[in-house]
Figure: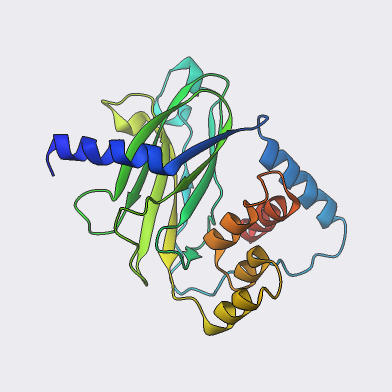
Length: 237
């Protein structure tokens, strides 16, 4: 792909897919942690989000800017937190799923999002965006791009750009997503509207769809915060 065509591809992605929500610094993590502390004082029950058992476990990583040799003042205290499983591959039934992550920063920072199909020569999505302050980012794969193939894990990552010419200095985090077919049980219950969609997806172990449905209320709603709390518990196991 030529540089001109690749730039056009990136430009098309921005107006269709990216939305940024300004929130108080660490609001989601603080509220979720508070809920988790309250829950831990009681007898722990099985979380609504129940990951499916997978033979292959792929861990996500988070590296700080300082540990990578970045000396930029605006990145010293910057943090990334992907709202995704850390110790297993998160699932989706969507052809064009939605991703969430949180950036905590005291000054504007440049971020880069990429989605990669293992074995592919080029990223499916690759763009950069200036984040002015602490935000939660919601990104849905644009419908004009090819849909995710079922049964194949894809890696997505977010990086804080320290030096465009030296990617090794960037702080980054990555996680995995895999598209699976929707079960007939889930399809039937969604049609009947027998319960909240977010809860039904979560019980089936479909993380990305559950979070996207919970977000339909808003990022500070109880369904959304409850899922983040459950995710934190699952990631600790």
